[in-house]
Amino acid sequence: MLLDTVDNVQRVTNPKLKILGVLATKFDSRTINSKEVYEYLVQLCEREGIRLFNQVIKTSVRFMEAPNHGTPLVQLYPELDGAKAYEQVAEEIVRA
Image 1 (cartoon, rainbow, N blue to C red):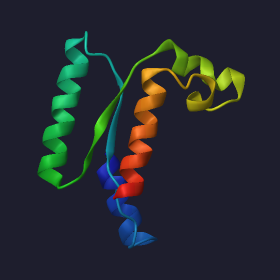
Image 2 (cartoon, one colour):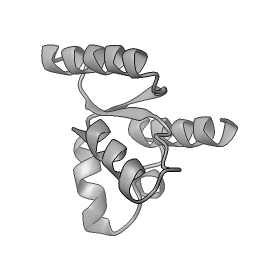
Image 3 (cartoon, rainbow, N blue to C red):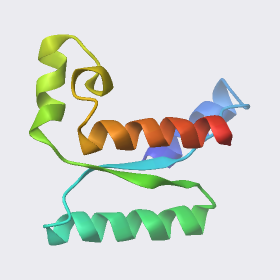
């Protein structure tokens, strides 16, 4: 559905709109569902020629707490794996 929306936006208002990539978030390696969804993303990105970022953002209670503090997660909990993963994605984007 999101790809259809991007397609519509490109046709109607912004033909220069491009998808930078797909980032897998809320990933929990302990669940079959997360693994299946990630595999689906891999296949979708390959089929559509869309970049899948190398990092996977794992689920964490800290993600839900950050908005209550009004501070970005990477500043609130810089040692958190998720914060480090977001920083690595930012580096990946800058290097692209």
